[in-house]
Length: 375
Image 1 (tube, rainbow, N blue to C red):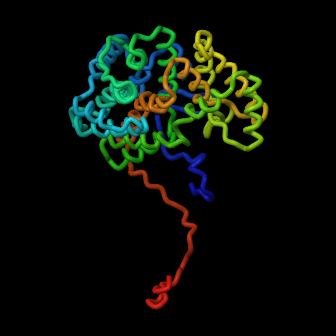
Image 2 (cartoon, one colour):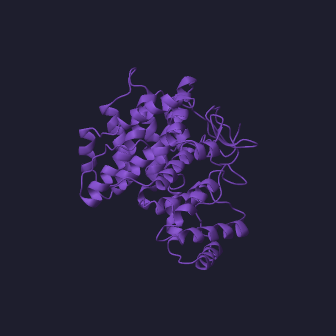
Image 3 (cartoon, helix red, strand yellow):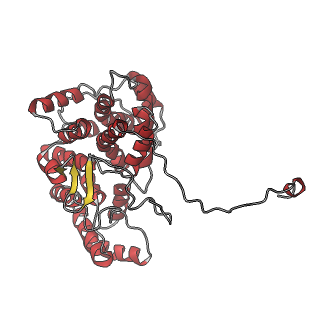
């Protein structure tokens, strides 16, 4: 297919996948055929990760074994701890993860015995501890122990963040959010990881490519921008007036619309309901009705719907997660989806190398020596 005008490959089918559907008529969002609603409301993130990485839902014993494997993989290697302590306190958390992942690739390289799936499990277990060790060391001056008795990634993360076990509601909400963020077809970071995989590069290189792509504000970080949007307002009326002023000034309001979905983001209503539950006991629960009013204004004025990032911002805030850690959490979840795509790309590989439509000057005359002296 020829692209006549620069458009970020919008609408271009760049390959085939068995991993997920996004915005397909009659199917909505599915992971390997399972509805996102069933996965988020009835399953756990561990089940979702297993489904994506290994291609099928685990049975009861497989799930038990998988959780035990992840729990046994939470200890940070000493060289990685030293690196995390050496990194600057003002480093971007995404670059902390990218650097840590790259180092881990030198400490525990991919081999015939250590497969992409094995490394994915290690990263799923280590991404939270890696991020939070760096965060606590540089922000609170303490070295944390990353091994706990929590049997879920969600519970483990919140325990490390706050220093004590989280309650069931908090764990459930965070677990659901990880499932919602786990996979989303050929988004920018996933496609970038597949491009790297298509060169036959190693697994860690593919993941660091994904992290680097997600680092960009046009892909990751929307929920962080949403917090900047909603926190200045104290009431829904203030939020409506402020949003109308922003629209009049033609300012971009993050967290609305989607490149692929045209009617709604099927993930949004799921996280919205959990954000509402959390708001009931939050000290600043007024941020939920403020978010709702902004949603109403955007639907009325621009016919735009909230995407996953919009209400996940309030949910993460109510869970006591610092805003700067929102996008790194995206990495924790999406590692499972990236891995599925890396494996799929390798299984039927062809180097991804599109062509470009050249629109520069043609047939320029090479200047004479005398002429080049004045150029």
